[in-house]
Image (cartoon, rainbow, N blue to C red; front, side, top):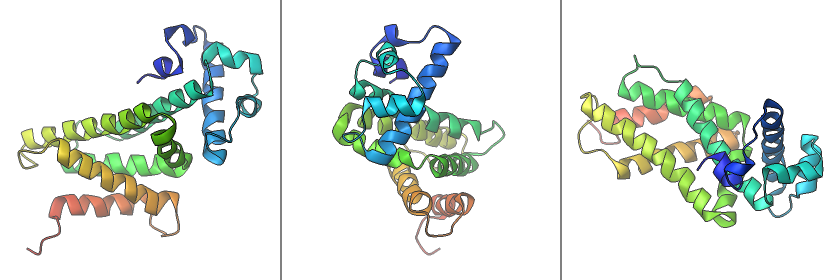
Amino acid sequence: MSVARAAGGEDKVPRTERGRRTLRKLLDAAAEEFGEKGFHEASVSSITRRAGVALGSFYTYFDSKDALFRALVADMSEKVRTSARSALSDSMGALEIERAALTAFLRFAAEHKEIYRIIDEAEFVDPDSYRTHYETIALRIADRLRAGAESGEFRGGLGELEAWAVMGMNVFVGLRYVVWGDAGMPAEDAAAGVNRLLAEGVLRR
């Protein structure tokens, strides 16, 4: 779901650079507010104060706090996508791609720890956004797994189930080693451990 659609429709899309900057301020302020207080305790007035935006201007971009929350989930999903994509290159092999994508996600999560609280809360505040977030990520992983199979690096038959399993590992490794942050393991090492599990499995050979 695009940020514009989540916000309330194409009529909410800013047409000027100033408008786009204002929208960005609101989304960034919302991430802080929802991340600290949760959806129900956060308020539009607090978000606009954080953003340095007039309260009345809020409704130029969003119909309600619910619409802002939906847009924020869509925005975070897009940031996860772009952070992972920016870490990849055409010269990488399939396994290397998985390691680089996870490392990028873990680094993003380290800088935006609020993403876990916001996405988890979306399950109850806006279940469609919650489901879309994870389904979209799983589709990207499934595409990568199939591409790896086509290149001959991965075994055939990989698809949706394996994509959700990989995503589950990635999400909970991020929770344990980045968000809780008390394990003293750098993102690169955590990603390498998951990558080794993908490559070697758990059976004694």
